[in-house]
Each structure stands twice: as C-alpha cells, then as structure tokens.
Length: 228
Image (cartoon, rainbow, N blue to C red; front, side):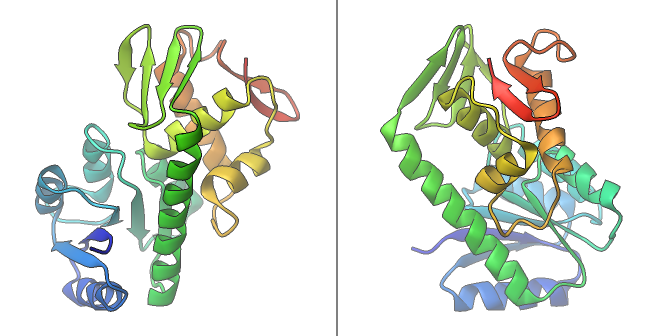
C-alpha cells in the first residue's frame, strides 16, 4: 500500500488535479472541501501527509492545522494564495511543516511531498539506533516520537520534535540556524531561517519553565542554538 494523503481545498479542480497526479504515483488520496470535513477525516484516518489550503469554508486552514496538532504529528503542507512572508510564517507557527504558494506546479507539489516523506523515513531509521534519550527530567521516546518532562507528556509538532531530538542527541553542540534548516527541513526547503526561530520559540514555550529564560534549548548569540 502506498502513502496515504489528505488533500483539502475548496477549489474542486485543484483537488481533482492533485488527486489524479498523486494517484499516478501510487498514493492513496482522500479529499475534503471545507475545514470541518478535513478535521473529521484527519481524526478518523491515519495519513502520511496533509495538503491543506489556507482559505477554506467553515474553518480556515490555520484553524484546522492547529486542531490536528492536538492529536497528530502528521506532516502538514499549507497551500496559500498569499505571497507575504508573514502569512507563510503564520502557517508554520500554527504547526505546519511546510508551505507552497499558489499558483503552483503540480510537479513541485509532488517533489515537496516526496522530500518530506523521505526525511520522515530517514528519521525513523535514525531513531532505531537510539530508542530513548534522557537528559535530566526530559525523556524522548524515539519510537513513538513522544516527549515527557517529569513523566508528563508534552505535545510537540513533528518539526518541533525533530529539532529537539537533534539538539538532545548532540548535547552542547551549537547548530546555526542555517544548519538546523538544512538538517531538519532539508536542502530543498524554500523557506528561510526565520522558520527555525519560530519553531525554537514554540518549542521553548512548551518545554521551558520560563520561555524567555531557557535552560534547555539555549542561544549562543551570533552562532546558533544548543541543548544545555
């Protein structure tokens, strides 16, 4: 069975085109045309990827993304007709992993999907080498991609988890924003280093007692980030 993808857009011609193209590559595709339908499908199915339009009836793509993140770490790619950088960062801030600006070439969409799926597969291979990572009161279960602090589970997005896992496994090593972008998002990711800053900020809000005074994920000014 190939990968299973959920495509969400209220423009039926766009959905039809994406679905046809992905099915040609052996993927299984479910479709939704509004936010409520998308959220219901995401709750009741297991997907390898969600392609999610920003402007949707009933619920916006941002709202759908945020609610999916409450129960799933599935990779989410936002489709947006807006080209402003802040809109793209906002999409990532809600827990998305990537974005594609409309109008897009279907070949670009397929390439982006395959790149994310490859990274996810590589991450699974790497995690097999270290099942559990523990530092102080923080524990990473690498098989289930879950994080616990003092026994309490912390809900992270896929990219927040991958950033934390990389830093924890290489405690004390300082990674520049450019290196983190390359290692976690991949060479083909079109975004810039502000994406890293957004994810570090959100990560600190979840794992630090005082996010403005981090003791775990620290900044080495002028260089990058490291796990202390």
